[in-house]
Length: 238
Image 1 (cartoon, rainbow, N blue to C red):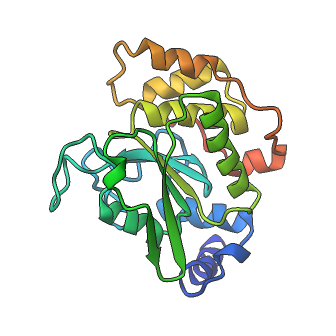
Image 2: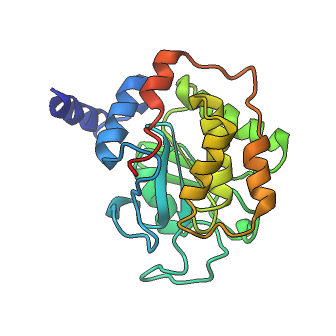
């Protein structure tokens, strides 16, 4: 039955412009099956950008909320055909592939070289917007949380990709805030999540760890227990 539902949803997502007409449940089922990850620590693309070929251009991509929000890095240093410095936004093929996968927005969590990046990609029935929001202030974090909340409530169609350079530190911080907001993570669970998903590159960085622990959810962005159970991944298979 699940396979049958997936085939139907594949038709809906990629054979028509009906993405906006899908329910949250349909979107969650589609992406969970498509990327075949259940827990927050599982990777969709690896450190060199390999794994799921249709998302080439990303690195260390992981789920935050099924069908709603994903995190990772930008595949620049390891790119096979367009290698450049690691401290850059997403390459054009990364943006195009996210657009083709039905993503609504990509958010660059640093500002370096964003001025040279393409800000919008049209790919048939979908348009991907590329934004720069760091999430370092309470105001910016609220902007990110609000956007995620709008995907959950179907005011925005298609998931969001939040990324830094490697998919470790800043994306981990913002993701931990999203998990505290919508999945009820405690301060300790959020920090453990951040630590696990740095791939070992977590020495020092006390300021980031402090932000992970100190983030407090916004009272105005609440979801039901049923939605939480639907979109929140398991914490770890380890």
